Length: 73
Image 1 (cartoon, rainbow, N blue to C red):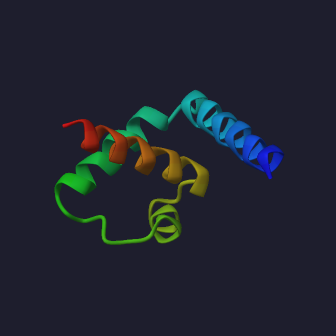
Image 2 (tube, rainbow, N blue to C red):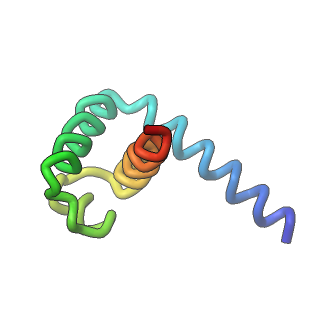
């Protein structure tokens, strides 16, 4: 069980690294943040990825980061 959790953590960190290296990451994050501020994020992550034509992994990372930054405020 501990090994499985470790693998998940490693995979999550790898996903975050890959998303951060994407060329459009900053622009996509800004766009999703603006949608959130306007109250237009009433979709689940999969629907959002489809609507914005973005990889699901990128959407998940961005939403996680926006949620974390929201908690800090």
